[in-house]
Length: 330
Image 1 (cartoon, helix red, strand yellow):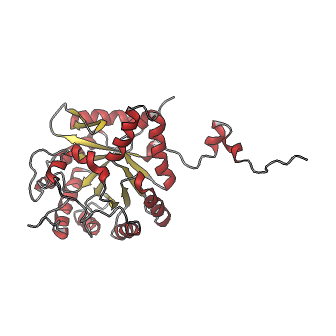
Image 2 (image 1 turned 120 degrees about the horizontal axis):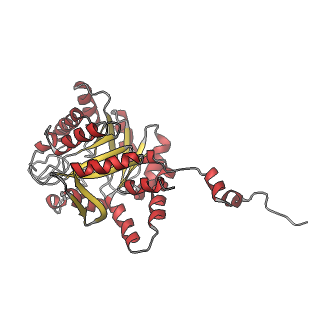
């Protein structure tokens, strides 16, 4: 008698309907956060040379785009300022109530109150040296002194109406200080998205070009406070510390090169885990797409689905606008 395999895994792959029925993960609009670069002025839109297809936008142009994407299901946007003037040694512009980010927060919440606005809390766009904090005479980034400024920055964003502040600086102990400041100034419902496992990665290059901090940073590095790419256990420690200090959500950055960290964190913690598909990841993938080496839609969607498979609850991606259009196709 002819013998047949009792278990045929291919039965569950036979048609698209069956594949969809048993799919373990799905990418939806609820998973996407769109990072944007905001310019001063009006009616301005500048394509970023190292990130083809991504634009710096003035507030008015951004609002038009956000309105369109909100109708397609966009739930959250993250703001990164392009500051050309007012850079100083002590980053006073970071907490200016009439600063670029603060004004943009107010404008978005007035126009689209249901859209979640996330603000980057870090000093590198505002410092003349391009570091994420204040420095001493030797160029060492001062931890506790930096936190004092970060708290002022977070409060100024909360006063403007932000929903979530996202400290990306990697200073020790800044989460509890920001949480205490938010409580003290009567902003208990403003959430904290902590960049908890932020690696000193080469994949940030195009981002620094986009916000204009690469020239200020020069040959200096951020290895004294961002994480060593060789370390995994340390990332879990950093995440645990930030959760204990009051973080509502935590971030792993970059994304795809650190899927192992995302996976470990999602298994170990009940706190929502986010990932950032950073500028270098975008540039690498887009280059292959533009050269015809990869199918655009399939490559983008697969690259994001891997974050969901690893355990991500949300993904910051420059492809959010395109993906929303894909998801809304008939």
